[in-house]
Image 1 (cartoon, rainbow, N blue to C red):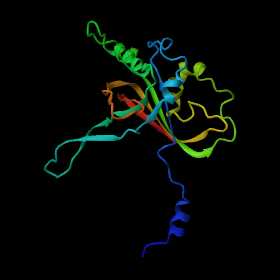
Image 2 (cartoon, rainbow, N blue to C red):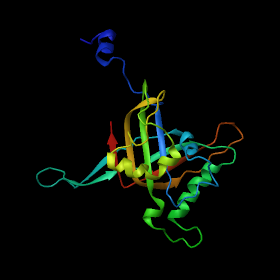
Image 3 (spheres, rainbow, N blue to C red):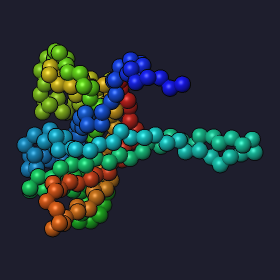
Image 4 (tube, helix red, strand yellow):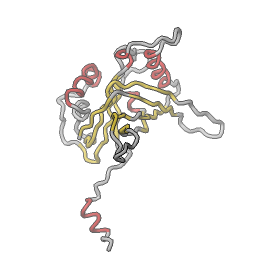
Length: 212
């Protein structure tokens, strides 16, 4: 016999995660000059309107004589991030400049891996607000240089970004290491609509760490 709605709510406390509470923090490569694109690195993060928490795939062998599949390796799935575009389309320039670090547009030679890879942190936010500062001060410009190192040391992005009073608490975070854009999707333009232009970017990375 199915339980009542009240019983269901009492067991779950109505505490369901919602998909519209999240935060994306992209730490650009040090080789990427932002001065001519964004005055503040947080601008590109604020424009991210769609994100995905990456999945994990285990590559397996064919079934053997004992009818078992065996794991060969762990595969980290790519992710997609969507960004609103401003009138100047400087978001496109940002990701194109990033890709130019990976492959020189004039001679088609690839750059050093460390020059074009960076760290991305995706945080799932809670409905609950923070009651006090976890960090004594929050200055992302000062913090940006050592953010990847601190996230790597902590094993997650949850405490590396910092949490400020009045903001939503971070209930979950995933840090993608050695990440870089793999594909910039075409922009769809049409006379039929006047929707805000968005650009979808696919990212690949070496591995990720999860924090709660």
